[in-house]
Image (cartoon, rainbow, N blue to C red):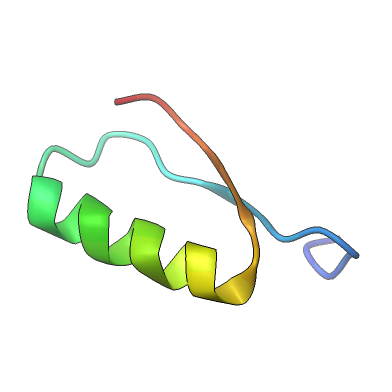
Length: 38
């Protein structure tokens, strides 16, 4: 399911830019891909 070679995160409906930035930084550290709308 969620455990695969690639980590894919879906983040939608996040209006708080700081929150989104923190999440993006965390995803980048995990080597994952960001999929979502701004």
